[in-house]
Image (cartoon, rainbow, N blue to C red):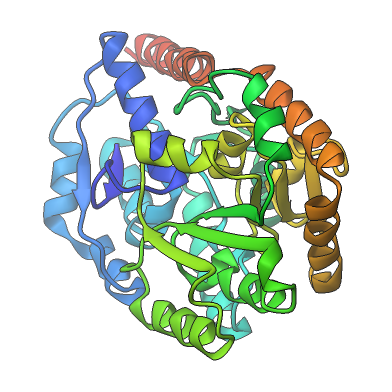
Length: 367
């Protein structure tokens, strides 16, 4: 498996890869991790000319080469050279969490990403998609008809809210709504526009806890801090940094709403984990979150620019705690009814084994 950095990185894609590696090893498979260093996009392109990386991928008789699609700039040309080396013997399987060129950014930069991404995707034999939305985005880029599977993440990593009775007590408590945002503080997560909206609301009705890395994009973090200061809401916004395990569970248990209405997600693992703690989710209608958030039922979905609507939702739920409780109960039940990580990873294991058997059958016929 080829990744950037460490499997312990706290993002949805890395969580998925980590669960997959653990599951496959538990099933008795041998997994070799090839970790490429994090660099700028342009530097990653140079990895395609690394003889060390190429020889490392061809030195063993691997059954499969798994690649996190995030690594596409390092592999977009190298994959084609691997074809020349082993005669198309070892299947290349891409785990696609998010299509980079589908994210909002400056058009010239996205044109570069799209060109590189298309070349990379065309080199892949089989795909593991985290959502139907991600699959459709890949299909818009390339005409792919090979093997693929949609295996969505589980929401049971942190367990579920211990007791449903907690929902009633939490919804009925007085004071401000406790809002939680779980995402690394980078532009694509949409924290800045959320803060702009919250600053328009009466200060006594809300508090926000932001859970996520404050070091991935230091420039953007400084921008967010300046915005908080300019709006004079420093007492209402807590930048908690990365939390996991019991700390994250406690934060979710003590919150009323999960708020990420401007983040374009390839899936949205944090959103699903919030449902498991009975938190109605305020999310973007753009992206894959709409595959499990039902507007007005277990959360709300917003189109781009619906800032006043987001503010109105928060204000209304502060006033109507009975409605908040109903949404919370539905949120918890919708999370419990979904497949867990073990079931999802088992389907991926079955998919990969089928690929290996097909490849061995072809090798036997060629022999």
